[in-house]
Length: 635
Image 1 (tube, rainbow, N blue to C red):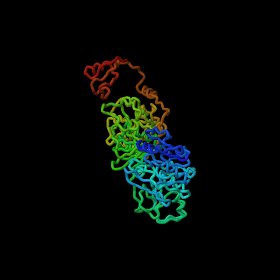
Image 2 (image 1 turned 90 degrees about the vertical axis):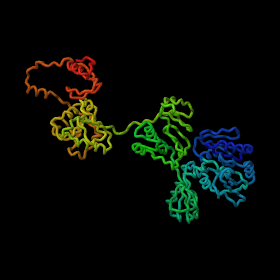
Image 3 (image 1 turned 60 degrees about the vertical axis):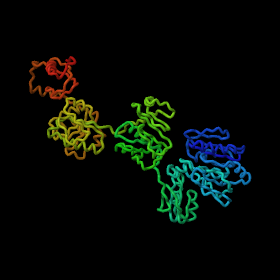
Image 4 (image 1 turned 135 degrees about the vertical axis):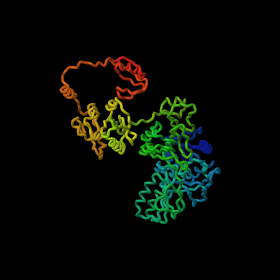
């Protein structure tokens, strides 16, 4: 096999590649093979030409595709052709003739652009002429000259320049073909070279301007060598020491003296020769949502998506309006930015988060994923077209849209267990209208909790609201059911100036609920112990240990309040004469309130639907007044 033709292919307009193969078809001989490497195209390339061997692989870039072609061919010489270009009808014939006559290491070929786009010409009339561009598509290489050299898979553009530089043309025997052999299609709107020039690829052109490059610039040498792994490097200089120029030339191109050059980034000193390329904002994944609310399922999906995948991909969230809480929490993992209609954005994958959002025209993407987080509730709801894939969170959602397309898929949403600090539940049950109950201290404790960003809710059962109370402090009014909430709380809070007994404290700790309280003298008598069943805070409310309150919640402490002493003491005072049972409350019945009213016996406002036990004789009286109905017997 004398000649191997390698064609890397990725999402090329099919008619371009078909035209190329049609031109090659009559030229193929037994001494020539052709391999087309489909580098993970959305629609795999198919051809009826049996002489073309198609290799399919996952997308890895042009370099990887060309390397695959080299490793899967056997020709003595190798020619590379891009899938959107074409060649002369005598391309193969002339190359084979030159191989037989000259046995060169590499041959440079004249080329020109096709007539439908901007015109460029490289005509080589003699061995003294050289190609000014590094493209391997305008050269033919002897396999032994390439040897173990391969294209850099990390470099997604400029790989030709690096390959040419490192293979070292100066060491090989060169031939020149004066007839036009290759025809470059400059009118392709989305070609790799155009995307690179527009800054839409990860590979960058980095330009250094250093007036005089000296041999002792070892840091520059190491930096250029490192950057050359993924980027194109140019050094503009007025002069350069020969030793370091020889070393650096393996990793970059020199322009001495400087000439105008466009680039993505300038390093070193400023120079008017550098022309900045208008760079798009480029990320692997862009998630677009016109609005991010403070709470919501779409917002939770985006947060969990970013949290789960931010270490695998460079992700950017674009929004038009967003609640600060969403910006804040997303920024911990990914770039979050307000969409700017005047900027250019590019990405490999665009994720549209709502079927009601219109895709922004200034985002250039390789594929579009449309999320559909809803069931079809309204008939006018439609999944937008032009999607590479539609993702539903459940089969129920997909069926509601009657979507049976092969591009649709069900992926259950990511659910990340909540790792936030457990919310704090506080309860106060106190008549705050009396001056000694510590309303100002309650506000001070609330401020200390908010300053520490503690998640808490504070239920206050009282007849007197507090002016200036934060939203976390909820006033429940007076209720005889406050005890049920105390039993469910993390702490009962009682911040009084003084207490002679304090029922709420003793009821709480007797139920296993710790308290937050001021250092009341009565605490010792009640069995309250700091850091055992209580956090005792100073009257001044200064230097409160919020961390201890939040992180060291007091549970499982032993406490038993015995009423035996109470009964015995009062028996001694009242005497031991037995009761005559003068009062008999009679039978109790279950009643239901049918009209809001204030019960004077209970001293409580009862609302419609409330059920309670009531003495039968009193129930009849209240029923006659039209406030209740009897719904069951009692005891």
